[in-house]
Length: 154
Image 1: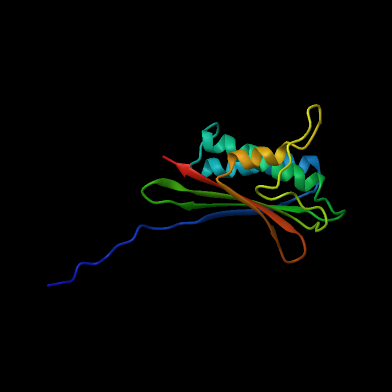
Image 2: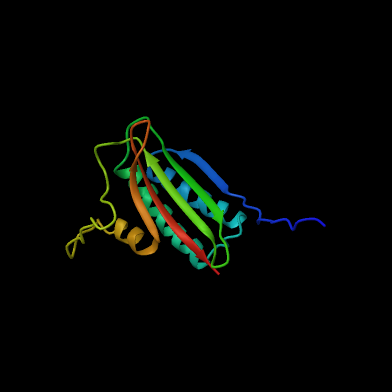
């Protein structure tokens, strides 16, 4: 008599990584290509997850192109999708890295609400509201990565 074998579900982590020019055009392109990649992974356009990802990618890439810009250096967008289990479809991780070290965004719990009438300063509030988890991480080579994660629910 054979012993029962334990089978585990297949785990395929999908990863997309690409560098973009540190300018507004590069930020727009990163957002569009990122959403296309999510669509090919089964996260359809205009779904709640896609819309949240679009806002987060747009904000983080705009910040990298504006505040993290170092002349002659690009920023990097990395997307990864890890399948989930019984309760969630998976986790979508969005990472945007740049090479500037002295201009660091506030981390979770450190965001100041801008004054009424201010034209900027609300982007990281959007990331904080939409992401299930996020952080600002130092990286090697010098620079920083802003990481945001979305739990993809059924």
